[in-house]
Length: 304
Image (cartoon, rainbow, N blue to C red; front, side, top):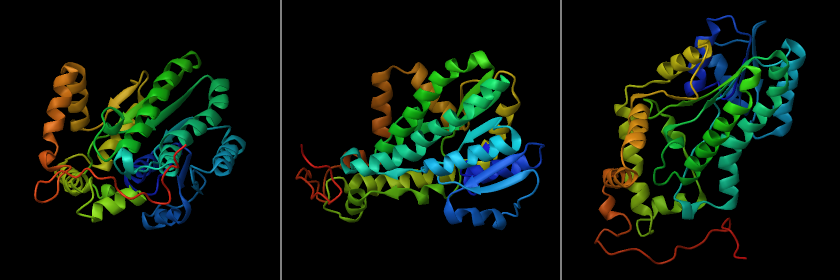
């Protein structure tokens, strides 16, 4: 079994649960993050391999899969858990930012899947679990690139679900919502979103000012934990016929229900009015609309 991003958060909670089973594990972490395994008292042994894996590196992806193929005959269960979130409105996302976001959350998982499938097909069994998000079923302001990456992951995974079924390969998407953790503090800002966050005169300043504490409150209030979501993943691994999509927290179930049963126009109307202080967005402290173009950074796209 291969689990990416296993040194922190949900990945670490899942790794701890799997240590009590009989799976042979390859637990990966990016760069120096691998040292966190020692802090978590997870040590390498005959059944557990700890490997550095920057999922955006094709060479490192190939090396990990080749080792699994040579040592254990391939990967029987792949859990694509590694992910990153960029916090920026669409106007503040450059070409480089878009590629960086998609590379971790979509392109890397797709390549890892491509690398493990030949051995799974040969054995006529295997399981692929992609960790998505509520952001893969709905979009929120200041998360355009992140939602795009998760929507892409969900679309490709749905296609894969049908493609590999003839070989008895099970494919699932786990969709956590807000989890009680400090993970949201680790979101990344682009050059322009960082500037707008700190500049009270920036057109999108209110978007960042109000969304950050709003999300932080939701995470503090959530009763879901990485350990609870990890339990959901291990249950999926044991199911004979696991579902394609698995909402893993209460709010994920709630949003899935809203999208399924609420008329789309009403759905968007309700969610827009639930945004914190949304009437102040795009205005300065005196209520004056902010519409002037913002200065472009060196990373912005060049006009054709």
